Length: 149
Image (cartoon, rainbow, N blue to C red):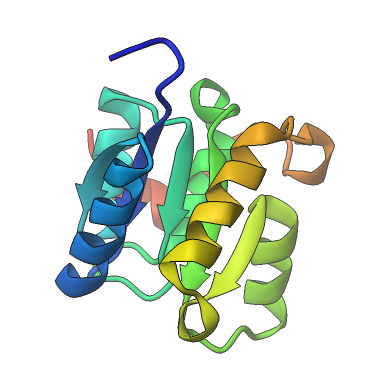
């Protein structure tokens, strides 16, 4: 791995989506790790923190929003950039989380590989505004009970 290569963790329960976007990101020169659910993502985040997390919202074991809250609560993960990418209709809480805790939110239905690649490059090129995220602390109690030990 060269020092300029960025690592991306792509988290989505749809294997077709994961394969398609992994291929495009690899072709663009990124290192790409895959997770099929929120629990696998949390384990991988600590094993090898990525530069960027591409995160679906509706997933088994932990939702993308639970993973996002966890990432923003962990000081060791404070530099991880996050793009929320989902088909989910955003309610008020989800929209707030996606727009204030994530660096960018995209709808899968409107996202092409070119749009995603442009968003990835844009997010990685800008500094993370830590004031927009929650202050470091513990994940919510319901998330804590299900965290890997």
